[in-house]
Image (cartoon, rainbow, N blue to C red; front, top):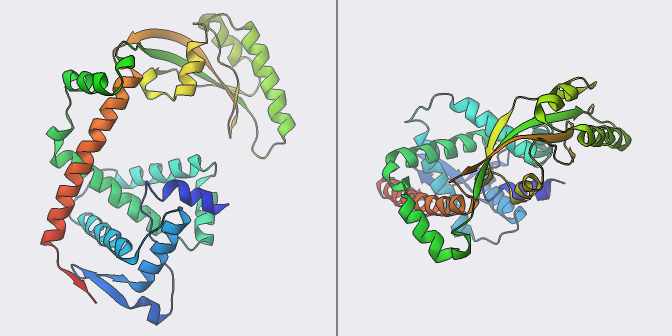
Length: 303
């Protein structure tokens, strides 16, 4: 069960394995500004990379761990307000994507020898690194409409005339207690479908939803089509204004959305994709330059 979970996140978050190991396994392989990387660290990182389905060499693993040490050392120099809250939120998001509670995910990590504090320290290092690069090279991440249009025309000319929308959505949750059998979800799905058949507009439909037992009507949100998954965009495009989307089963119950507003937006999914590509290219370029600068200045001793 843990293998696919780790495989999902090994490429996006750097996780180090720690634990008590025999003294021989703790022999220092590299010193990075005085901080050790042990043979045990290298062995465990190699196993972790292999869990993610990648092939790697000892040299590549050592190089990755050196870069990681340099990033972690930056956490001692820079303070970011609410950083611990950001780390906790990032960890909760990881657990949610794995369809587990934070406690369940921590238990799964522990079974594999991954210490939660170590995972959080790596998340913290990556957050600080990301913010540091954005702040240090801020002008590199500013793209004009002309640049975006030029890339869009070159890469996806068929999407130049694409229309974007801002959707005003009212989430409606038919609550299902945790660990309930599938019949409970089926029953609530039928209730949601019944509401959907009677729901003709948000003015009258929202109060009607609030009157149903064990239904939570959450505050309305505005979501741009550029920020939504293609599948959800397709659902919203097929939903009439003032009506409800089809029911969707979640961990908390059965959820539907009332489409209470829809207006055109200049920010289209195609433009967002191009902007994300430009940002990623700029971030990777500046990140490599700054990391090289740190490595050039660092004292790295191989044992």
